[in-house]
Image (cartoon, rainbow over all chains, first blue to last red):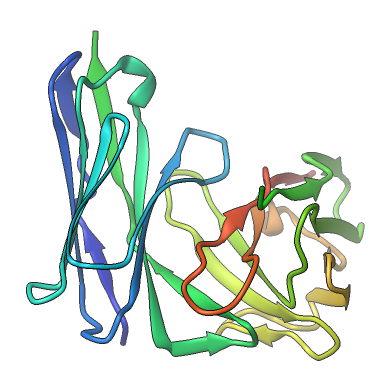
Length: 116
Length: 116
């Protein structure tokens, strides 16, 4: 059973703080890792992709990957109330393939609330 | 790039009606698309994988005769909920990926289905 685990939260941070979201995965051969943001009543939106160990920064977002520990995280700097959403961690593993596109395994999501 | 369009965004209909939902990749070809369902406050649940030119692959517990999937072209997949009942009321979301292996999936805006 391929699993992706996240703390469901809710996680509350004050405006301007750093929000830290964590995710662990069970399949050691996983190759691709994604963070999606889902606002209430909306579909998920891709915000970060990471494929190799280390940090990847995009604006206020930093994704961190540690394959040895099977751990991926998302940091949101200078958090804003508009960042309040559920954040989904998704993992793409080579052993789960459906045609040309590999199936993603999603975590259950972490609900983030940024307090003004 | 990588835009996925889903239509309609909302459907309200009587019990026993069949409802068709369309998912289009607007600026790329997608040999594989995915259909998810999400109930309020719950995680995304993969229903089926839609493969262009062949039969869809359904997840365990999803009735293939209830949820008909057709993927007749490289840019269009449809999900038909046949003889819908109130318990089928949910948020249905499709996703697609532009290419092979490690590409992220991009989601449509979702269809909120309400069966009276």
